[in-house]
Length: 264
Image 1 (cartoon, rainbow, N blue to C red):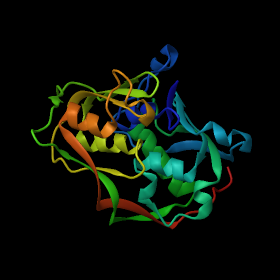
Image 2: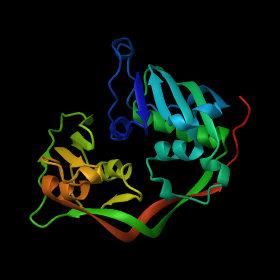
Image 3: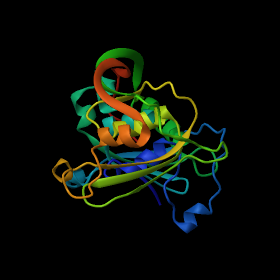
């Protein structure tokens, strides 16, 4: 089963970077959807989530061509469908981040969709069933800007034949991310899931890269013997980049209209 969940951030990160999560052997036998396909949901059932599961977190899952979303708010769905930080969503109603839904459905195109195609399906569902209308603006806001550090980047260019992939491991308080064939905008998007504000790529570095990033996310453990550095230090020392808190331009989605879902 493929699973994309904020509770398991790295899996969503891999998906947003364009790579499927590890799948069970039976699911892997299903053929992938054509790469140039732009699917929508053929049928989709939307129902309120069980309120008793609210504390269990939310998830996006797919088993073959069966697409499922569990216990997610419209804010969660929009963030994943468009690959943005919650602070890049503007003018949403109060219920937008409170009401939770379970969504199940299948695509209108044969085969198993990749994550980009699944994003497309949710984008269309938001428009058709929630009547979402929005426009994009660029606004000044608190962001983290990724730039090239003094001395230049320490990044290995990926082979053009490599497929985007991300792996995760780590011990208590520490995270190890292994990126393969990832662009700088994708790195910034991935880092946004660990931060309280959007992360924006300002490196101007083209191409795709392979690298490993290891950091300690538990501040109380940074002084432990052999502990990895903080994320900000790790990005500088291990990648030759900087991630600084600044105020700068970021794209936002301004909600013009949104409704609770239409009947199934």
